[in-house]
Length: 391
Image (cartoon, rainbow, N blue to C red; front, side, top):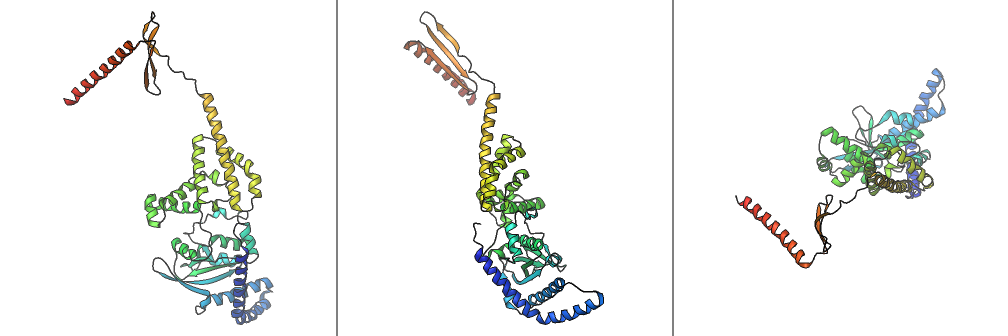
């Protein structure tokens, strides 16, 4: 991958180890109590598996350490652009069941859920299986007691899929998307939302409020050019979007290219599905051999551009074949002197709205007289026009 993840993994592993040691220390006393309770349960209703018991004890110990407001190492206070101060408490949940029970994705989270697949997120899933989570999510506690994830829904999904731990910071106050973005941007690392996801978010706001793009740009403090790019990308035919290897990491220029390609295809009036199949055939080997997702996108879009040029040439050739041959109208003979073999011709081109007079074998005196007659005609026409205007 373009980003070297080894140093980040080392830091994440060290943090994870420290958190586990702290959790174990804080939970030792609780563990003894819970073990005693568990023995009583086993004697009454059958034994409970070691894995289940371990998960319960670990969860209790982590909850105990996380909920200690007096522990400054697991919380921080941030002032948001609005002036509001929020306290963020670090929370760790272990296992799919607990993550699904205690968290939900916030309605304001714009991450495209269709992209949460094993194929697209294979590297992140591998990290979670090894116990690495480089950056915690951001959430707030809802009125129903559930933590709503504003940023980090992809990490949450990976933790659920791998039945591993999920770490996030929980705000003591409700957060919106803008608040979460500010908090995340203060961190050292963050994968920004993609152009496509922003487009879906802003388009939904336009549809909900009936506001114009300019109003939305002012309200959310986003450049109009960026907003236009986001929304135009979302409007691209889904048949195109679905076949781009990694839409989530399209660069600004690639987003613009995809928009332009879509408009060109519409003008060419080609069958998009057939077109995409041709692009896939041309780019498949390079996409599969790409060392990272950026190179995969580049290979696909290069083939896309090349196929468009092929389609343009085909359309031009078909247009030329189907176009009836047009001939310029023959010049009209206004005057002919057979003795002198001289002619005065008038040639008209309706397409260009041009009229030409051609004098063949005419002497200079005749040419001068013809010039005077034309000049006199237009002078008379101008005089009549001026007289009408004066009235």
